[in-house]
Structure formats: C-alpha cells, structure tokens
Image (cartoon, rainbow, N blue to C red):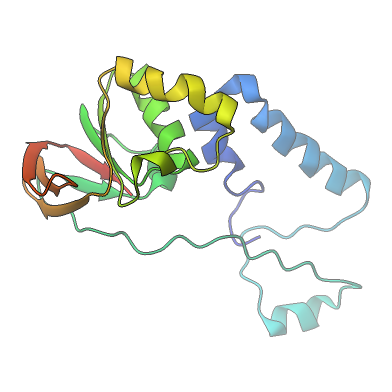
Amino acid sequence: EKNSFLGGLLLFAEAIKGPHENLGDLNKYLARQLELTGVTVVTGKEVTADFIKSEAPDAVILAVGGKRPELAVAGTAGTKVISVDDVAREELGEDITILGGNVQAVDVALYLLAQGKHVNIVTNEPLAKLEKGHSNWVKTFIKPMLYARGTRVWPNAKITKVGDGEITVFGETGAETTFACDTIID
C-alpha cells in the first residue's frame, strides 16, 4: 500500500457517511483478517518490480485503486477548488459548490448541509441523472431534503468563470448566473 494506512477511500466514506455506517469498524475488521490469515501488508511503499523481486513473495495482489480525473476548473485567491477526497480535511467556508451530481456528490452535499453550509450542485447531466448510484428508494427522500435545505441544483450546466468568492454558471436556460462561492468541490 502506497499510503501509510489501509482502507483507501473507506476513511473518506466514513467521514461523509458518519459513524452509523460502521465503515471504520469494517476497515479495522478487514485489516485484522489480513493479520489473522498471515498476509504480509507493506504500507508506505510504492511497488516496483525491484521491490517485488527483493521480497520474493508467493503471490502479489496489485490493487491500484481508482484515479480521479484532474480538477475541472482552477481556483482563485477567493475561491478554492478541491477534490472530493479532501472535503473532510479542508476549511471550506460557507458557500460551497459541488461540481457533479453522482452519489458521492450528493452524499457530500448532505454532509455539508448537516454542517449548516449553503450548497449548490452544478452538473453537466440532466436532473434525472442526479444521484446516479443511489437506489430509487433513497432518491425519494434525498432530493426533497436537498431542496428543503436550500440547495440549488444546476442541471445541464457548467462553470464558466471562477472569481474571487464567486462563480458564474451557464445553465440549461441559456443564461449565465453569478453567485457566492468559497469552495468548489470537484
């Protein structure tokens, strides 16, 4: 494992989903199972062919994980742009825009709303694709919760300008709208 810890995105998911999901416990359980079954796990090390040769293992499990695309927009002095992976570690401000509308984006929106943040969601997909990844049952109560807490969803839209403390969005109505934004989460 290249990181100094096991679990990959489980730590991010635990921060966003909350302790009731028991993802921290799952991570500890899986690490303990590796110990009990005699699996040697090396952390803090990038795997190379030379490293594998020097260790001479019976087997190598190469789990490279997912790689997120580059951030879609650049930040400014007044509006920072961060990856969704950094949400739990960064100071975000009060006005947050989430770029994307999949299940992770919506979960992050709910996490931020619970903290009293003002959230906008800008997605290049139609509104029908919002929450892609959630079950239809979950969608029946999440969308109303987002709207009831003041979240504005901008479907079929894109960010056209990132200013100092504000962004401009071009939406499906054909008009550009500028609003306050301290942080964009991509």
